[in-house]
Structure formats: structure tokens, C-alpha cells
Image (tube, rainbow, N blue to C red):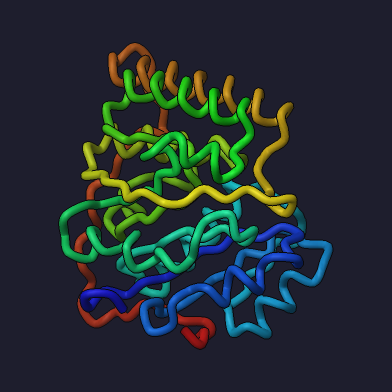
Length: 267
């Protein structure tokens, strides 16, 4: 727990056998209540490594996509009574030791979501190995998204994200995309719902084991991001309504009903 709040790590995994043990070992003990590894159709030993490390493994029968893995993780995090769900990548690209900092503002009631920004000091992103084409695209897309969403983030494309319980209860994340643009749609929903958003600076580290989209998929992702901005604008102007941008009211508390827990992790 952090500041008396239950913290659940959600870790999507697809063939991450080379890095997942390192990522799990770096999660601070005593700060996290559960670690959920979403085995998104892995064809290697990622799931076994995760179980041996003490994580709870939830398996998809086949590869469903990055967004689909997050959906499964967030549903289970809510079912386990998480106050904050923080996504940690299984490829060790984002520093798991920063989980307490990622969730701090949410647990203190100062924010509803927190993002780890590699672009807080842009020169550090390049020094950390971010490819030049990804660096340029990140800056350009972030500028465009800021014009639409006004979340005041220095990076809109980080995979290090923490969401408070109220965000996951109110955003219809199950209606969002199953691929990488899921993250952009979550940002759009944060803007629609006027949630409080903050960020912390994080180091950039790319390696040969990093599982970021390749150039072709990144181009597709870029166009998909622009499409999300277009739909967001139409929705906000009332020209066309999209169910994925319908923010729900918080459900009333149900007395005496405890969140289910199908398995306990060692964290």
C-alpha cells in the first residue's frame, strides 16, 4: 500500500521471457499489493517466469493486443479492490522502481491519473536511445494532441501510466480499441471527463529487447491517433457522439460487499 491505498500493478506480456523477470524483480516490495501479469497469448516461458516470481498470471487463449491486455488487467484490478492501477511494461523499458512516485499524487488525492514522461527533458530521450524518427513523431503528435485535449502533458505517448479507481470506474475502457491506440483513447476520455492529470519525469531506455511498435506499425498508430483526435472533436462539438467517450457517473457504494480475490500474489 501507498498512503493507505491499495496498489495493483498491471503488466501486459507478450513473449517477454528475456525481460519479465527483471521487470518483476524491480517492483518495490511492500509498496504494491498485487502484480497482475496478462499473458496475451505468449508462446514462450513468460507466464512460467511470472508465476515463479510470485505474480498472478491471467492468460488470454490467443494474442488479443496491447489494449485488450490492459482491459483484462484493469477489470481484475478493480475486482481486487485496487485504489490505483499502474501499468508496468514487461520489456523493462520503463523503470519499475518508480511505481511509488507514479501513484503518489493519486493516493494523496491530488490527481486522478499520472503519466511518466520521457520528454520532460527532451535531450534525455535521445540520450536514452529513443530512435530519431520516434522522437520527432512523439513531439509532433504530442503538440497536436495538446491542441485538442489540453491535458498539459510533455508526452502523450508514454506507456508508464497510473489510473485511480474513479477513472477506471467512469471511463468505458472496455469499449476502446484492443491495439496501441487504446492509450490515446484513454487520454481523450480523461479530457472528456475533466479528470485531474499529472506527470513525473522518467528515464528513457531502449534496448534490443524493447517491444515498441516497429516503423510501419508506428505510422499506422500515428494516423490512428489523428483519427481519435478527429472523433474527439466531433464528439465535443456535438456533431457526432461516440459511446467510447461517454463518461459514467460513479456507482453508489454497496455496503458489505467485498471485492473478489481469485488468487493472491506475494507483493
